[in-house]
Image (cartoon, rainbow, N blue to C red; front, side):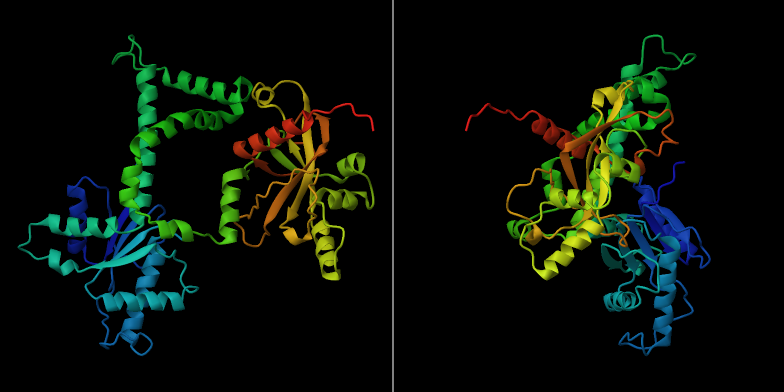
Length: 454
């Protein structure tokens, strides 16, 4: 229940392991000390700083002073055992971490980096954000009582690493949640609270928070979602209190040239868009649900045979004059586009679970479109330039385009689990995206027209 894997030390010498771990324990810092076991089979997640002895099998030693593992079997075995150890103790989806080796031989560490890069597909271990080394022999002398020396050295290495910012953010996020819970507890206390009759208002308060966020009629099925959504403003407030611009500037100094040159690979930006705007754990008939329209629905509202393709072509607003290659690209885009329906219930009606017809905006989910294929004449469709990329690299980058002239209403099914009249549920759009979409739609239907005689 109270496990913490943030800092781990892996060593094959039990005495040295305890000595090094004690440095953290004396400072009140949680640290997991693990005696090396080649059969360890529960890789840890959430590790932020990992200390490993370079030679976990002390019977082996390098025989070449040049550290060429290709010609030195002893060194190659050391590196192989170390790579296996990293795989055993750190999960592939661990997240960012700093790796610190107990050695004073930087050449050995540099050679291990080359070894891992050349064999990255052989070992299922995440790449660290940075790698450092410390000579532990300086701190394991029998007459040494100055643990502060080692602690200072470790603090300096971590402070100069990108992991420091991430570790600080994670720590303050946890503290913000703690402060939020403490606030709620203090608010719910009343004069009748005593040792014999402890505070029993917490449950009532959480239910009330959920009710205020997602509506009373959704509480039973979606209590957790309601509590988290309701607590977000309080958590954000405490995060702002804990994190000052100055502290972040100290942790992560940035100069003007870095700001000017900052860039991310396109696919990484598209994956971030997906994290920010797409919810893959969606439910049917909830606000923001996106469906791949069923053939019956398409036939009823758009048409049969070639009409859906013509509808997609007009919606994307391709330019009129296309060369042979561009025509082939357009045909491929149309062929791979999905006609979608986005559930657009007013937020208040959804929260109150009112009896209503479900309202949908029709549109398409399509692959990324080259701007050179598009007309310069403004389209009547809503065409947000937000590209998405699922985490699964086998899936292509996509974007959503909406036709505000095609809104439909359908009866709410008696059971959301058995309804198939709309189509397959793909995902749902998160609040920010839905706010943008509904605002654009409101602007569209409230356009002012005038009487004009020509």
